[in-house]
Structure formats: structure tokens, C-alpha cells
Length: 344
Image (tube, rainbow, N blue to C red):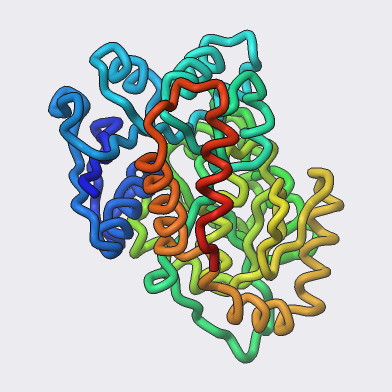
């Protein structure tokens, strides 16, 4: 197939190891690499460079570009990545724009099952998990751990509110302090603004903050130097999200929130976000640490990007089986194609 992934911003799309912050750009790059490995011709283009009927598949990742594509007569697949549509609610512009983009698509993907349920005004949205480069995010097995080193990797704040603790930094730091363990927080410069609001958190002497927007190569070394990953986030659009999958690929046991029916190996799920629950989770994974690492080592390839891309490919091929996508029976047709495709 001839496929176009539509560039969604001015953030450069770089190869693995050189990337900085930009989750959507990372996802697009992995789609391109995986689909090329599967034998497809894949281009990265801005929407104004795409002509109607030029490609078998046009895959867009931003709602406003979807709406523009529809105006130009370009049929498209949409992947929604905007957590603000959930944060602001169904009466918000964000939700309505996302819904319009989904309804005008051939069909759309969301990276969490709860997001599919949330957009209950359409039958065109389906779940597609995030992935991880398991050949890059490699484990660094530690035989003699004298003290656990905690890690949080996230870009905090939400909707322009610098002090909003969406990623649960306070709970992670307070848990580390209660257990007298070292903790590192790594992310983008938004974290600098977060800590300017929450200066009291910086008083913990065993806290290290890295907010220089590290590349993935730098982030990998940080992952491999730590032993337990914390992610007590109260809002994620992807479940599991990218950093949890990276931690799993590195075989680093996790204490985190996760709204997925398919559980990650090595994950202690927080049913409520409190310091006490994070402490309990850290103690739990510490007590069976090697068992969890062994389980993660066996299952670390299940979310590899190539498996995600094979799933995308099957969905793309389903399009070619049916031409009338405006039919009210689209879900029945789509599910028929999907259910009759061999799955491994």
C-alpha cells in the first residue's frame, strides 16, 4: 500500500536515540518504520502536500487537520491524542472538534479503551495500543541491589496550569521521603515551572530533577540506572502510556495507574492515588522484585512497535474490502473484517 502519515507540528521527527519531547512525533516515526518493514511505501508529508486519491491510506494525528482534509475531499484515518478533550469534558470545543474529526474519518484509533467508551456518540473509534522499541529500550539487569532508586519520567502540568500535578510528582516524592529512598524526576522544562509552584518538594535532599529535555539516548541511560518506575498519574490519554511501556521493556517494575484490561508484566496498579498507596506499591514490588523482573523479561516484546504496526496494517487492509464507509453498518462491516483476520 501507498501510505501517508501527515506531519502534525513543527517538532522534528528524529530517529530513535536522538528524539526529545514529542510523543505524537515519536508515534508517527514508529508507524513509518514498522509499516516500511512490512513492505509498504510510506511518506511523511504536511497536509497541504497531499492530494485527494494520491494515497491508499492517509493517516492524520491532529483533529483540525482532519477537518481540513475532509473539506478537501481527502479520506483519512485518524488517531486521537488529545487528553484535553477528556479533561475539559463533552461540552468543550476540544471534545466537539475531536468528535467531528472522528465522525468524518473512515475510522479512528484511540490509545486507551476508556477513551473509546468516552466517545460514545460515534461508532468509528477503535482501540489501538501504544508500543515501544524493544531493541532500543534494553534491560540492565542488576544482581545486587543494595538500595532501590526510584524514577519518574513525565512532563507535568495540564491545560496551561503549571502547578497542576497531573503526573503525581508530590505522591512520588513523599513516598520516596517516607522510605528514605533516592528519586529522580526527568522531563521537559514544564517541570521547572511545576517546581517553581511546589518549591517545598525540592527540599527533599535525595531528589534529583532533570528538566533539560533529554534525548531518548539520555533517557535510556537514566532508565537503566534506576530500579522502580513510579507513575501515579491522574490523567493519561494512553493506557498503557509510552513511559510505562519503556519501563516494561527495560524490565523495571512499576507502581502506577493504568486503565487497561491487558495488564503489563511487573506492574503494581494504584487503585487510588495517595502517598500511602504509592508506598505500599513500592514495598510490594521490592519484596518480589526478582520475580517481577523475570516476568517482564519473558513478556517485554508483547508491545513492540512492529506488533502494533501489524495491527494497523490489518486495519488498513480492512478498508480495501469495503468501499461504502458512509453506511450506518460500518461497525458491523469493520468488525467482520477484523474478526476474520488471523491474529497471533
